Length: 171
Image (cartoon, rainbow, N blue to C red; front, top):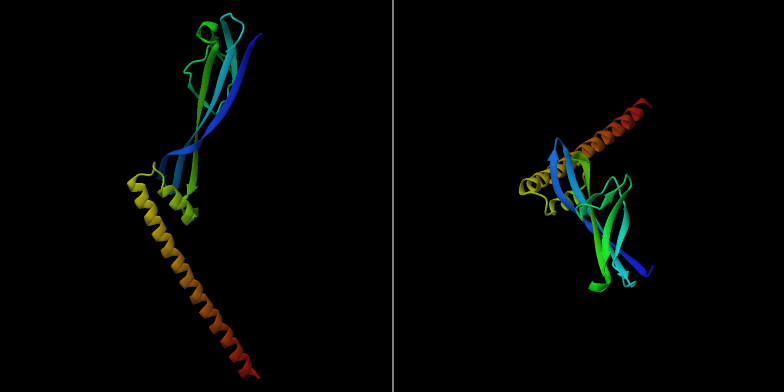
């Protein structure tokens, strides 16, 4: 057919677009982007209208081109015109986005995760302050847990000593 099509793909790193706290849960929204570039080379000498089929995915939203020439239940079809009068080359860039939401219980967040979300551009000043307060409260809780353990260790040592003394007195 004297027509070649080259495909290249690229994915952008995920971007956190929103971070919020609601009822003890940190909710993070991430956006993923992928792009497929098609280059059509027509060496036939005649103008050609090429239909490029692209798989449709339920989780991904088509960003560009805004509207395909045809749509089926599982495919997009894009029309690309390769005219030898304009060099015989034509390109098509198909860009898609996917939005994911993830929830984290605040009680289960470690300090590294709190720091990660605090440093995101999408984090508001109010959220950063709430996460700083969370870190302080978790630190205070850890100190109390350590104090309780020390007190329990002392109680256990006293109980062992009393048991030993009682057994010595019974002899």
